[in-house]
Amino acid sequence: MRLILFFVFVFAGSLMQAQNNLKVMVIFAHPDEGEIYAGGTTALYTQNGHEVKFLSITNGDAGHFSMKPEALAKRRYKEAMNAKEILKLSDYEILNHHDGNLTNSVEIQKEVAKIINDWGADIVFSFYPAEGGHNDNMTAGWIVRDAVKYLNHQKLPVFVYVRDYHTTTFSYIPDFAVIIDDVWEQKLASCAAHESQVKEANPYALGILEEVKASKEKQREYLVSNAYPFSKPTFDNRKSLEKWYGKERAKAAKYVEAFEIAEFGKQVNDSEINHLFPIPKKSAIIFKTCWYFSEDSIHMCPLPLIKYVFKFGMIVFALVMTFSPGNITSFSPVMSKVGAV
Image 1 (cartoon, rainbow, N blue to C red):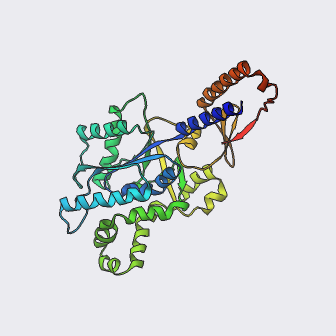
Image 2: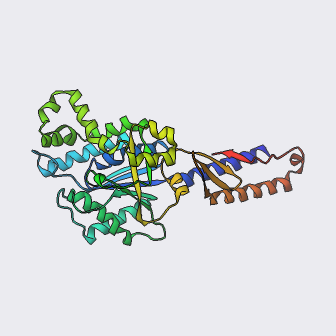
């Protein structure tokens, strides 16, 4: 009897784990941008056992003041592989499109759509597309948006907007924000893996190359200054943090990444946001309903998997009742009203 019940709980636990395992994609224009704009959130996903794939649509072959394109593309690929290890990504793919003149062609849309389909993405992070800014970044956002028509519409991912250095300056209120204090150093390390950019190309463009080359402290200073503008608490993202973390935790946050749910793809409510994104919450299962508790409100979401586990358990229980009546007489079931998730 005990052995059968043990297998029931093991089966239920493995089903829940499989149900909760997410496949996440972060799509951007150049190698290093996934790390800069979503590296902290990515680190939290992988820490929690989810699979994350980065996709750079260009190979970054124009991002240096002295290296030739082919050599630079190879170097940036190696840097991306180092960042992959730091963030514990499942995959980091770099497409062979040239840096600087990316176009939103049907061919590239279909290429990106196939990669999203093949990965089986539940969530796709991509740039918010707008006028102005960096051609490649904005074009990458439009490519992802226009690629949706080529996706498997039986299983559309949730698309999430990431703001780059240009669109961060626009007025907006994020749908959710993630505190990344615990993984800030991991995010910085993944950015530091791109040495051709943070130690050479970017300092050169700013006229501080010799200073950065000469000092570890200056290298660290520049590394932080390159990532912090997209990881800092602001008035708008603190409001979002208060909604998901409560006022005290939001006030104490040092490093934050903020996002918006895109208007295309699968649409989600607050309860689904809780499930899909690394936002810690107190939660409990009450019979067959999942309830999320925040500081000011209670959110409810259905857990259809529970009914299947419940049915499986009832079948096993019925079998035990039929074939082991002696064991059942000493078995006194206790209905647990609330079980922690």
